[in-house]
Structures are given as structure tokens and as C-alpha cells.
Length: 313
Image 1 (cartoon, rainbow, N blue to C red):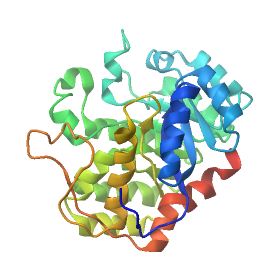
Image 2 (cartoon, helix red, strand yellow):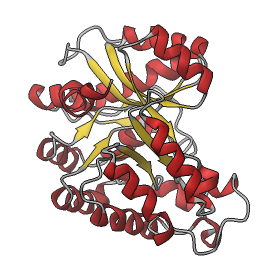
Image 3 (tube, rainbow, N blue to C red):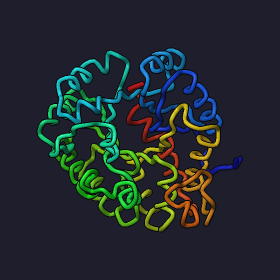
Image 4 (cartoon, rainbow, N blue to C red):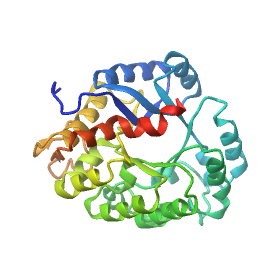
């Protein structure tokens, strides 16, 4: 691991996942080595959530996963109950996940399902009315649509998924929204479209999870990627998407290392330190650093997330 980085301050990881207290504690020990002192924890285990909250009382901003099975069936009332109890239970945020493969896990999904369907309006309204931020994952890498999601009848099309999300953003302009994975649009040809979103919707911020996706796509045109990151430096939060209990030390360290090389250095053709299934058959992924200015790095790693979420922990 490199010992010298341009940025030497604390890191707020705005996109992590937690399960049991045992796996979370192991994750935190490695994160500490990489300078992480605060994070959003998306909860997958209620008992783990309770123990983590007790053991690490000021470390986390907790996000509750809203019921995917209920949302997918337009079964809104149980989700509204979740939202009404969320803050009292110790959560500060909500999370929904609609990466297209969610359809692999839910049966009998209505053929007309879309995240901007009027049946789901009460969910967005409840979040907005209660000033509960929403992390909403809607789409995935372009590469997935060419490989894993080739059955478009089942999985749909990326541009349609992005249009559905934009419809939600335009309708609920007071809802605080965090869109993971650089708005699911880190591909160079999509950055101009993503810029349009940020210009139109001041209630939206992005995070930089996941490391291999960011490194793979943004390295393809460092000039355009660097210009985007500097222009919208107030709107992007550092995030890794690391998941407690998944993988060994290399799983966590590689994700932090990959992004630090990407954001802080001017290195060229540095091998990605973690596996990338999308490029394993085409020679692998290589990082070309953006060498972002120090003031931008301060915002990315700490100031933006601290400004937005510190009062919620």
C-alpha cells in the first residue's frame, strides 16, 4: 500500500453495507487503516444494526432498506409503515435497490412496473414530507446490459431506467436523493447527460461506488472525467460499496487503493488492484489517475458528506 497520498485527512465513506457485528467490526478495522472515520451503513441485518449502533455510536449514518418485495408488487402500505418508524428505530436514511437483476429475486412482478409509477408516489411523498434522504440505485454498468441483461424483455433498457429515475427527480424536487455509482453514468459518453441532471436537480448528490466501475470508465478519458469532477466537486461523495462479510482484506483494501490512485495521482496504466469480471477476457482494467486538486479531494473524501449527513448520525 502506498504511504504517501495527496490527501491526508479523514474519509467519510458514503456507501457501505453492514450485516453482523462480527463482520462489521472486521470491516471497520481495515477501513481505519485507510483513514475512514465515518460512513453510511446500509443495513442488511437487524441484530447487527442494533449491536453496531451500540458499539460504534458515532461512526455511522444508518440507512434502512425499504422492502423490495412490497415495492415490486406496488404494495405501498407496509413500506409507508417502514418509513413512519424509520427515524424512531435509529435510522436516518432509506435505501432502495433497482439494479435490473432485482427481477431475478422477486416473482410475479407486474408487467407495467416502473419506479415512477403513480402507485409508488406515496412512498416518495412520505420520504419528502419527513425529510428522509433516499439512496436509490436504479441502473448498472453499460457492460452489464451487453452481457448479464441481454434479455431486454425481462431486464429492460438502461436509458428507460434512467428516464424513470429522472421523472422521480423532477417530480420530487425537495426529496434529498443520493444516486450511487456516479448516477449509474460514469461512462464517458454519459457524463454530459449526468451533468444535465446535476444542473437541473439541486437536491441530488452522487457517490463514487463502486471502485472498479469508476476506475474502468473514468480512466478512458481523464480530461473529461477530471473536468466533470472539478465542475461538480460539491455534489460528489466518496463511496466504495464495500460489504461487511464479503471477501478478505484484499476485498476492502483494493477498493480504497483503486479510488485513491484514480482521484489523487497522475499515474497511467496502473493495473486495477481488484478483479474486474467485465474486462478479464480483454486484458484487464488499468487506472489512469485524474490528479484532482486538493480542495476537490477535501470535498470528495469528507466535506460534502459531512455537510449533508453529519447532523443525522
